[in-house]
Length: 411
Image (cartoon, rainbow, N blue to C red; front, side, top):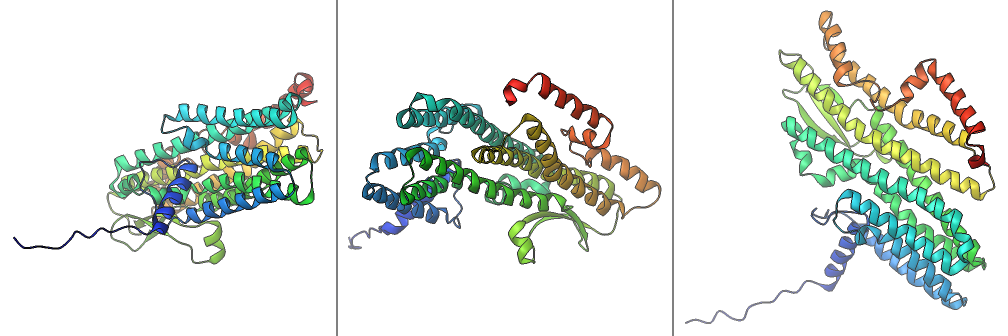
C-alpha cells in the first residue's frame, strides 16, 4: 500500500470571506432574494464597507462632542430602517409589505418618543406612514408587474425565454432604482455629521437628516425618471439586414446617452417582409409594449415618490402645500414622465412596422397595432383628460371639492 501523502487543506483568504459576507449583506439590504445567484461583478460591498467606516467616524465624533447617546440613537434608527428587508424574511409580498411598514413606523415612533416626547410624534408619524406606504406598496407592485410581464413574454416566444434565467440583466435594466435606497444611510450620516460639526440641537440635527435623505432620494429619482424617459421613447423594435428575428442588448455609443440610458433590450426583425411577417410583427409589437410598460410602471412609482419628497422638503421651507397644487403637480408630472414618453415610443414602434407594408396591408396592420400595441397606456385616465373636453370639467370639480369639502384638511 503506497502512501499518497497528506490531504491538502485549502483555506480561502480572509479577505475573500469578508467580501462575500458584505456582498451577501448588501444584496439582502436591497431586498434581493436569497435564491438568486449573486452577480460576480457587483461592487456593492465596497459601498457597504465605506458606510460602516463612516458610521465609526460619526460615532467617534459624537463621543468627542459629548453627544454619544443621541448619535447612537440616530444610528440605531438608521440601522433598523435599513434592516427592514432582512427582518421581513422571504415571506409573500403582502406579508413583507406589512412587516417592513410596521418596522419602519414603529422605529420612527419609538425614536421620536424617546428623544422629543409624545407631542412631536403626530405629524412625523403621518409623514412617515404616507411615504412608507407609497414606497413599499408601490415598489412591490412594480416588482410584481415586472415579474408577471417577464413570465408572459417567456411563455409564448423562444426569443424571450432567456429572460426567465438572466435575472442580473433584468435587475440592471429595470431595477436600478434600488440605488435610491442608499439615500437612507447616506442621508442619515450626512445630516448627523453636519449637525454634530456645526453644533445643531437634536431637533435640528434630525431635521437635517430628513432633509438630506429626501434631497438625495429626489436627485436619484430625477435621474431614473430621465433614464426611463430615454428608454420609453426608444422604439425597442428595429429592422436590419438579418435572416431571423433576435433580441439583443445594446449599449449606446454616445457617452452622455450611455450615462442616462445604459444597456437596452432591442428586438431586431428582418427588413424584408415574408408570408409570416404579419403574425411575427404583431407578436413582437406586443412584446415591445410589454417591455415599455415595465418602465412605465416604474416611472409612475418614481413620480409619486418624487412629488411626495419634494412636498415635504418645501414644507420644511415654509411653503404652503395645498391639495390643489398636489393634484395639478401630479397630473402634470405624470403626463411628462409617463404618458408622453410611452406615447412617443409606441408611435415610433408603429412607424418601424408600418413602413414595411403598403396599401390595404398598411390599413389592416394599423388596426391590429392599435389593438395589440396601443399608443396610450390602458390604465391611464390622463389621455382623456388631455385630449377631450372632460378635462376642464374634471379640474373644475376637483377645485370646488377641495375648496368646499376638503378645506379643513388643506388648511
